[in-house]
Image 1 (cartoon, rainbow, N blue to C red):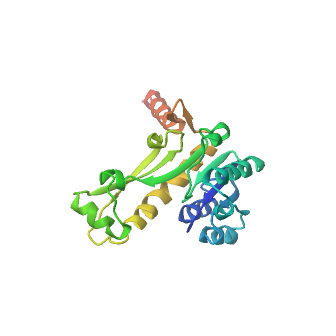
Image 2 (cartoon, rainbow, N blue to C red):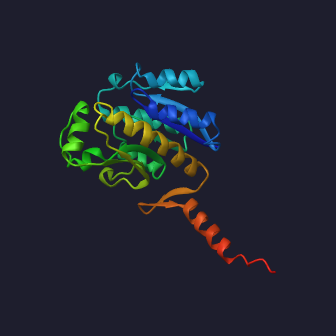
Image 3 (spheres, rainbow, N blue to C red):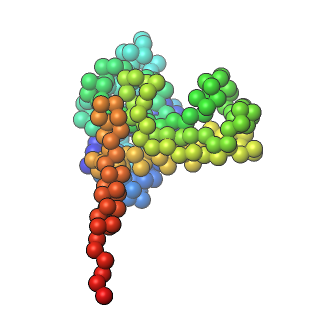
Length: 226
């Protein structure tokens, strides 16, 4: 079992996707060891409580700076012997020092909407209109490894969600529900099974090689004799 911590700051929908995946046996090798919140009022903590998960509050307001705060988070992760860190709506960047301990072991999700909109500043309630104005038909959701080079986070998997004219203001919610919430448990499952790793900045998905190998074996299987 891979000891996993989920870092949260808000509603915790991605956390809920992991809780549900655990309940349905979809991440059998993942131990949801702890939920750590930067916000004592985050609804994610309620989700964790209902699921019977250990909860820790490291309140950002109690620290003089982001760097001191994130150092405290890193210390807690180390104290708990965490092997996999999941950023699930965590509002703060991971400090460089944390990568000394967790390089290649931090997973998060997001969408490519702002990139597809050329990084224009768009309010959430205007996202659908902006996407349609830009001629977007689909928007990408992705799961990725978080690295020091935050602009080049290696993508684990992607899914495209169709833009609908009646999405507004739910486009962001649909990207989360139909994209990120589906991709995250699958990525965690692969990592915890030892089939997913980060090597020299590139994602190695051994499940794909296994599938290819099985296909090759199937082709090599001799035909039945008459």
